[in-house]
Length: 251
Length: 113
Image (cartoon, rainbow over all chains, first blue to last red; front, side, top):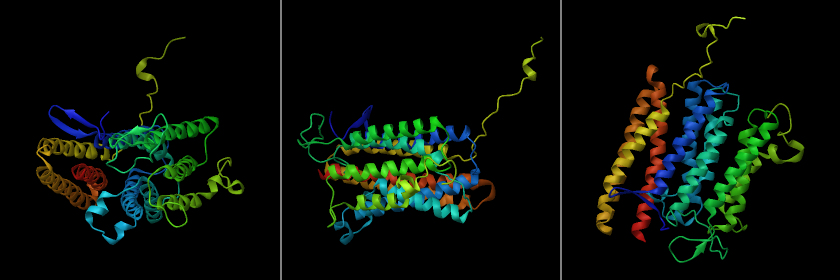
């Protein structure tokens, strides 16, 4: 296969990455609408609209900000091209989280809004990551060189870890884990989303070690530092004395 | 025992339809973006200089699309009966910005290579 993959429609060409990104948003949103229609959402349409807006604005800021901080050399030559051309999902998720929490404070919503977004996010991320894999080296999400039999040559003659495919497998496994957990009994309000966030942040902390990233003097990347901040925010999910997954009520 | 006639059965509960036209707004935006990206792909093969010109045109079209969504979104979101449409257009504008500029800079990376 030739990377980056382009899909031919007659004599026109569309990057597969762009199509998969569009597909990720479309299918993720359809799944959200389907789920919402079949569950009791305590937040009304207008509340949901403002929460979506808060999430989008926060994700936009967070993804680009962390995307730039990933490589501090960009800070000295910051311009619109660098600002718009660098983004990362971890920044998007954490920025979106801050945006949602601020919005909920403003519109006085106390119930969890993330549970309905969990499966759409997992599904959308998985579809989007297939697109990232097909983009090869152009979007900067590839892995380190590797001699493993499944390493992929993205066109520069160097076999690399297909980290995007690893992530697709992880996301599907995480979806299955949450689904299995819910089969045993309903989870308390907000826990589905928290398990997703903790799982994904943990994954990103680990997988960054096999990515070509700029490393801070403390031996971890800026994204890993951000994931640690996110994990600290969600300490109630994984810290044994504060574990809320097995509690019947309260988040 | 007599069966109940069908017209007296309890109707199946219909899930309430979301009023937010986000799906439609984003799909229309995707369609517009794919259309001009396809058109510009014809000119991408004409060499690096032609490619840069096409990228500049793409960037301008993306900016126009994002700007139009944002402008109309801001107007509609404060209009009582078009609030949901306004919110959808604002979110659509953000999504188009994220996807569109990302794709544009991926093309730039290809040209650099």
